[in-house]
Length: 293
Image (cartoon, rainbow, N blue to C red; front, side, top):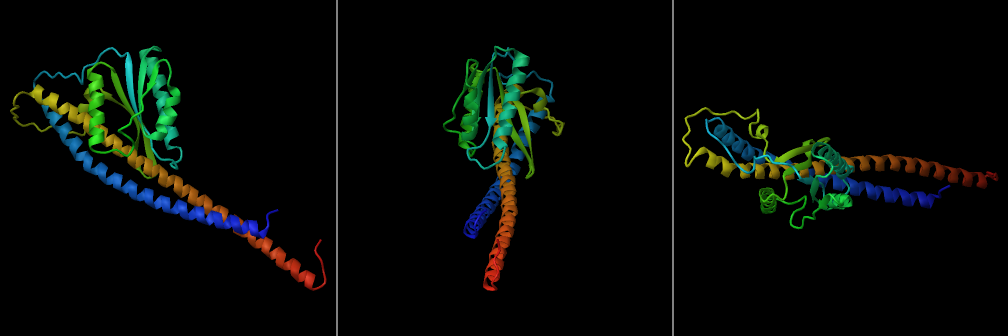
């Protein structure tokens, strides 16, 4: 049975933990709202590019680009988004499970001999993914890119992936990430980034403006120039959604830890009060000449 001194020490320790988890929840909440604002600023850029592409595709012209050409799939690249920091619950584990499912489905579709190149974003995801490295799976450690990257790093990373595809080093590029919906809701998503799918370009939410456009130099040249920007917009949005989802997962994890600390604190305080009352009763009985055996 714990002594009063031991219980008092445990109560102090739990109180300190409660303060830490509460502070971490507030910090993660602020970072999550910052990522939400960044996501809202990115959406108009992608929307405008899709509108331009939609108007281009609406004209009677032939379009060709190496980024939309399908070829025999022998080597698949997968960019999987995780976190660099811990204390975000089962966030990384859920994404890793999605990666395993994607590997399984791709082998069923393209054959057991298909090769994979995995690009894990985030230190935690790299530690999990490197265990998969084997005969048909290559895991590349990303030095200049992490889960907190933005701007120039994302741009360079995206264009390097495009070049890998254009050079024929990979025949298909997929991205796996947590799509941010709200603080309590993030959905695991897997999307094909390259080659760019036709249905992705002609999103149903994009309204084509039927105007008599004159394209200079020609529609296909503009399409070829805009398409890499579309891929970049998708990648920037994915990085930002991953950041928002990570912080949302951390907020929920810290909230759960904070609630558990409060429950434990109540139990310890009750046990401490009972033990203290027993000690006081025993001392009173001793004074009155009795003894509790």
